[in-house]
Image: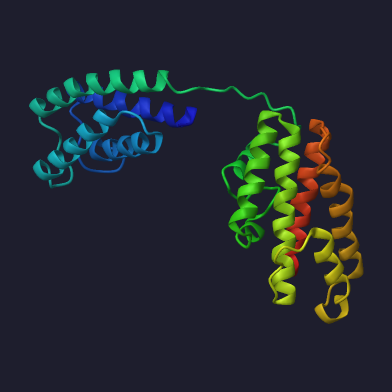
Length: 253
């Protein structure tokens, strides 16, 4: 559960607490049933407050049955009973949240943290636009997401390793789409060599093959050295190069 989710969950619990003396309308946008539903979703997604989750579900069923019409406020007796239930919810949720580890991240990469966070959450960003992201395979999205998470945590070497693995997944998909053949167990160099032999037939620019060779030789193969350790600056550069490579690949297929 993110800090923002925890904040929103707290606001929903507070809303329910105040229902005992405000007597809110039951149905409608941002009103009692809606708030209970949002709270239920956050508890489910955060895997916390199991007893509260069951209780909230029962309350939703009860209110939906008793208040079927729009614009009707909750009755005082129901509101007081709900507020009393809220105290148990608050206690359980606070206890469960106290057990959740929280890591405060100080971003040192120099990249836009909001845009990097979008990649970490497996979504398009300024690094990889939506029209490219939608074409990528699941393994590419996963690898670029993990690489972004590593950058957010300032762990350079793992970011490089997983980003370059994502680059190879893109190359393999490029080979598959261009040749209509499966890459199988071919290495990066074997794939680019075969593509180089068919550039005219496949409509591939020689300069693009050279670009693929550069990423493979100067980046990927070098990263496989068992004693190689990357700086954060190097990891940022490689993440940007991989992002550009992925975009270039998908502009061609």
